Image (cartoon, rainbow, N blue to C red; front, side, top):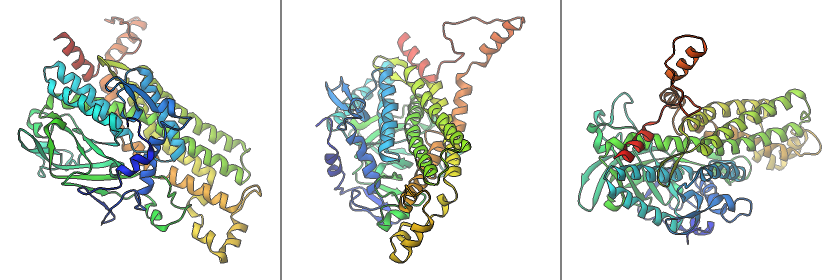
Length: 506
């Protein structure tokens, strides 16, 4: 199988017998036909189309030394900085085809995170985890499985550590251990695309202390497992998918997030990649967050391209495309988009090798990427809303357009330039509305991969203010203790890099 055909993926997730999936209080039997979830399945399917489409197959395929075959890049372990750049480029291109989050990146980043983390653990003498994980990588790659990455816990009271929570299941925890495996309880929140996946890869959401060791766990489990319940969250305009239309709700591609409940779920020991190893939990979180922040430079730039194109076309439809202020706004949106993308590429090509065969993104550039993404989509959305006009929030529904009594009025009063019909304008308005004012482009841009405060914490950790101050004092003619290093940047090492160095010395 290795690089799977899209129809094989669809068939594989059609039949579930153990997992319970709920949408608006009702259990879903088949995610591939459910009107709420089918658009998510189709967006996920685009990642399986990519290795076969002529314009993306070079980016979407990679050679795996684990199985000595070509694999889908979404299940690939990065082998070079060029691999990391290919990821960002692929995410931008697929965004052009779906106009939504295609939901496979978190699982992709989880796979690479655990490869580095288990390597670091092996260098400290804990080799079982790496051996298990390499076998898991082979299993995933040979079958081209669809993975969900599950990091964010319910968290309960944010001012309390996991072991201090009055609700002991506020963070996913081990409740029992046997020679065959472990039992876990708790929940993971806001998990992207989980109902459309075949495997869930669970990771700790924060650095842990020794008292939190029951929560310092990582494992994989089939999505269709006894004791797993998935509750799909609401999104803006999501009820339109039940209307059966083809314009208002963009029923062909969308994305979802879900709450995963682990109700005393059994995990076989061969699928456990961290068990009580709290001292490595901080490394894992640092590695994952940087990987995921780097990728946002690709997918959000791709969505921005769709949004800019929509606004540009709407300007033509109402005859204002040549107005200097409109051109200036579109140019500003382009600048913001390419800035996000450039940061993602920089994070890739300035990658860090932390162990043999382990390529990690540049952590400073990755955090800069995500901080730009937390800001710029809102600016792009504001710009394109300005160009589109009030109709973006007040346009008639497609059902008004399809009503024979009303169609002639809408055609008469909703049309702009005669080169375009009223239906053209309505379609573009709905595309812009659904892409620019929604979870994937706005809310996810702020909170996905960590809120802006998380990146600012990393800036403070990584930037060596003392070094730059000594540089400034030297240039000012003051007493300075600066010792110039070979590095151009005044950056400190991350905890992960320090861990990698200490294992090499040992």
